[in-house]
Length: 231
Image 1 (cartoon, rainbow, N blue to C red):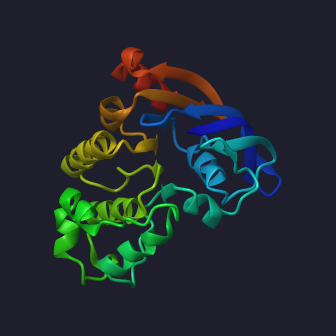
Image 2 (tube, helix red, strand yellow):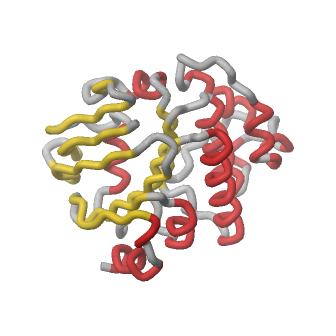
Image 3 (cartoon, rainbow, N blue to C red):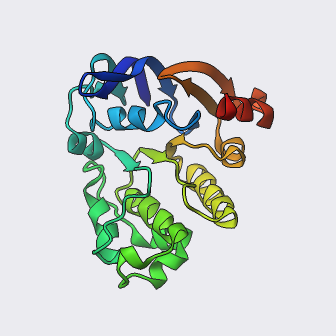
């Protein structure tokens, strides 16, 4: 579904991601791991077109999207939840959810009840300003907003950030259930090794802007994950 080929990007003239190649198969959960500052979020911004490509290509559903604008990539069916969850604090929960309706213009079956089924607390707070939600609730809202657009690929950049451990486990279970129920493909950036271990079918490790390891779920142990997070 997503094929990143020898991709290089960064900020202005500073290269952060160098010559990275990653494949994400349809229906799978692929995790990108590594310490803080090694380029994980930069890579996701590059995939979404928030940063330009210095070299390489990105293909989504067999279409070259390397030069497309961010909104065009979203409309092709890529949902993006940025690091820090990225809700609109002055809008209500319901207004935030409706912002996700523009994702994936090929599909028009925006089913809010599906979102409420996975995130019932969101339904309870529809008329509340998003800025007043707890960290866990903001995480749920940001994922729900991306799901409203029925994306083919969901990119999650550190969904566990700033969330209590019991909520992290709950969100992990919901992501796995969504992957199973809807067949949704997920590209997950994460440092919480319990979440990585429970979700990832394949895992790529990044250090200094390059891929330094690739593992399937069969050989992905907590020790391996911890090694990449503490190098």
